Each structure stands twice: as structure tokens, then as C-alpha cells.
Image (cartoon, rainbow, N blue to C red):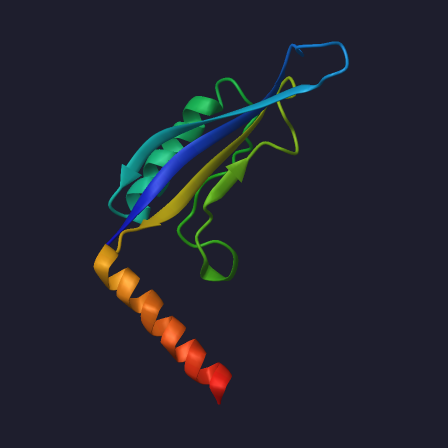
Length: 120
């Protein structure tokens, strides 16, 4: 079973703890977990509309189901034109849920295959 995770990471500077430090910070927030990529894209684009009220977001910077080579566009960022030095990275990531016992068994089978390969 797969789900789609929509997050936004903010990267920004804060007051350093000492004179010689640069206090680079980041904070990632989860917007939601969705059953389909289409739902995540729709909610992601709504989120970008909210961000566009505060940050510079180009009109063509949207999540898309079909982008380069037919792949989905899963990352939208303002890193090339940050607002007051603040960057954001809006990202859709596929979460894969697998059965634990099956996964453990497969890893041992893979080790056995590898061992036979090395001995041959």
C-alpha cells in the first residue's frame, strides 16, 4: 500500500548564538498524507496558493501529474528567488507500507542469493 506525503521545509537564518556563528535553521511541517498522487497534487497546489500570498511563487511553479518525461513534478521551491532570504521546499513523497515479516524474509532470501553468487 502506498500513500503520498505532502511537506514543506523552510530554510532561514536566525540570530547566531555567538558572534562567529551562522545560525542556519530549517523547519519541516507536514501538510497531509493522501491516498492518491492526484489528491496530494491538488492539496499541494492549494498550499502553494497560500504561500504565494507571502512568498514569490511563479505561476508555473505548480505540482503536476505529468511533467518532464511524463514523470510527476513532486518538488516546488523558491530557492532561486527567496523572499527575505527564506527558502521553501514543498515536496510530495511516496510512502510505501509493506508487511514487516515479508520484508524481513525477503532480506534473508537476498542474503542467501548473494552468498550463492559469491561462492560460484
